[in-house]
Amino acid sequence: MRLRVPCPSCGLVEVDDVDVELLAERAGGEPARYAFDCPSCSATVRSGADSRLLRALAYIGARVRVAPPDQLAAEDADVAGLRRLLDEPDFVQRLGGYS
Image (cartoon, rainbow, N blue to C red; front, side, top):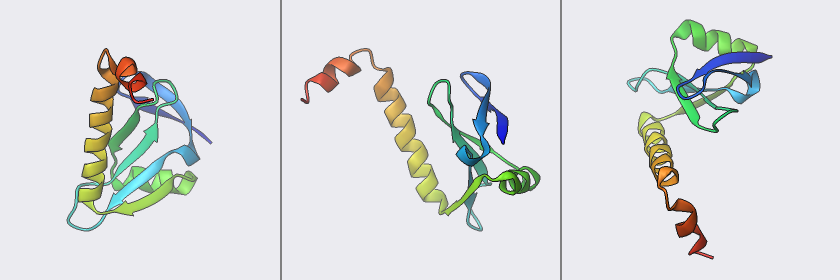
């Protein structure tokens, strides 16, 4: 099934239900979220989701992952750091220096 989900950079995009991941934190953590890789810009998009949306996404086939909040926060920081690195104007030239 195809879903229309919002990407902050591209607006509404279509993704397959199996490409959406539910990130369900353990008790006492942040609220649950869903995540997907944008098919247009390749960004990893994470968005908050209430219990009704989570149930609907799980019902139609989204994958569910339970992780401690600190692990998901660390992943968010890693993604943000990589995006900053990729946005630097000399990234490709610096990458070529490692060969």
